[in-house]
Length: 188
Image 1 (cartoon, rainbow, N blue to C red):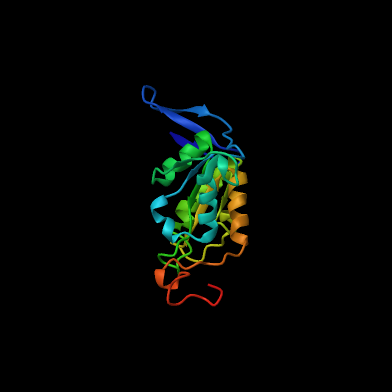
Image 2: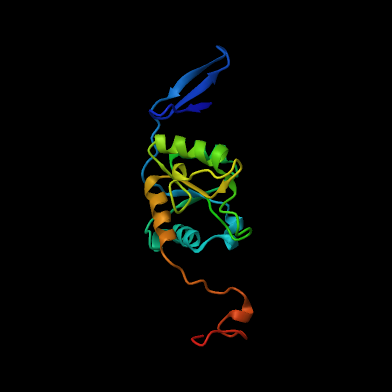
């Protein structure tokens, strides 16, 4: 399958092996504004920023949580496959900045991973963000520049950006700094 945009929407072409040609199979693909599906590598949860932690926890809380609806979590571990799934059935994808390498603002390359996906997603009515700003507004400073990438349903991407605008008090997770630890704060 070949997914293409020339700036006037997104269209999918499927190879017909008998003809040896790509045939238009999906025209004017649109991503729904809302979703009940998200994709993130949950094995990295301990490294996520508080805004991402909050978003995922709210999704996992389901109907009894603040979002009052159940979500499905997916993770294929392939940017192209995740993009195809979101273009096919909607959803939101998160590859957020994390604390493993704090000097890096993300893991995916802006010019040849994030930007092409962001262009397709926006052409299909979705949104693509670093969590703090629109991906296509990031001015490249180097060829292999890395960014975080959140894309898909416009409403969900907007919510995650709003969460990044809030301030979060980081609570220590180390036992020595807990409420019964050696280095607790005066309030603790």
